[in-house]
Figure 1 (cartoon, rainbow, N blue to C red):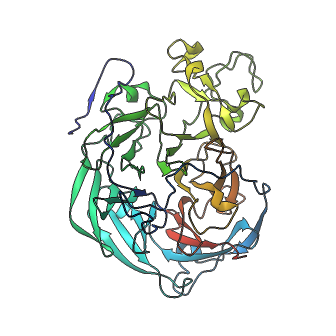
Figure 2: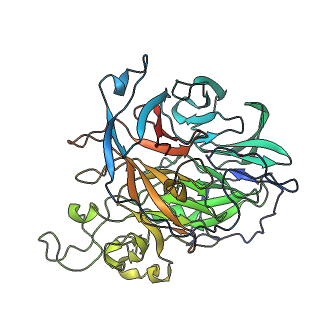
Figure 3: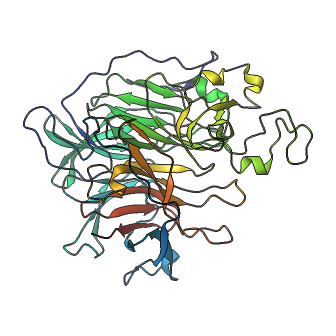
Length: 475
């Protein structure tokens, strides 16, 4: 299916009711790939694809972290690591700079046990091959180059062979994977996707990728603006999550009103979830006094901006609308007030005053809200990995931190318990931070966090240009 961008004047986004053809394919989104566990049909992936039988995880105490020095090997003491650094991690964890990768973004473990990392700025994907000593810096080589802003990476089984999906800013590609390298030319799964937009005021170009257990390929096409409804009426649309079959057929919109859903991952029950960056500089949505102003409706009040709107972590559901930019999740209306679970919506004061354009009450509440302006990027579920409990019974999301909050929201890695009974995530706690100085400046900003085959968590950082290896205690 060839996509050609043009503007539409009708409101809303039409959802194409196309059935997704099931394929004999299983997937791996970022996690270490496990060998097949069955002899028929598709091979098993690193993410469990059967309904979860676990129960609600007991959540470790919030703030139960300790400060540890970040180990830097000889030759790595440059740039951000030319001075000693430390991170706040759970008690007993160790932290080291594992590799220096300029502009490191999304990660995926290959079937061969190497870590692939995307470098959008350099237009390439690199492969980090662990040495016999896990703590030693890996060897590095380029797997694919000459790409346009590559970001998302996902491995999957297709027709008995491994394939690698790569999300460029304007298309989604599929490569055959053979013995640690790509084999042959890329097959374009979805091309001519919305990319740069000269008219946009906050263009989100980069695409993430996840593959569902039945082989369906999911990817984001994010907004070109902070809060412009025009993105909803473009053809093809922006601010959506789309999907296609592995051969590119059945390409269609799945979820709409998604400002910037770069985080995509497969949950233990086989559903695909997304972590979403919400709008900035929100205006006060109520008629009434705030910050000493008699009627603050429609005004940008910094104290309100600081905590509104929360970012989102939700399942990708056919036909669901997340409301952007007409509706904003509002934790003040949750039960209890301030809760980051099941967050309802409030009409936007600029794009939907009084709810006259869009009925925000018709929207399903947000499953998990993250602190406002967290800027979530990589999302990964840890079930089936070698991470110890309780961490293996949840998901991690790397958050980039804010630019419009005072004081700034800190970059960090957050953890959310998975409630197997409800098949949903619980509110987040901080797993790793320490990237931000007391004056608000940052020496690092996490992008993705994936579990490795050695039981460590590997965190990419596009600001410090590094991949960290964070190792929990073995007992």
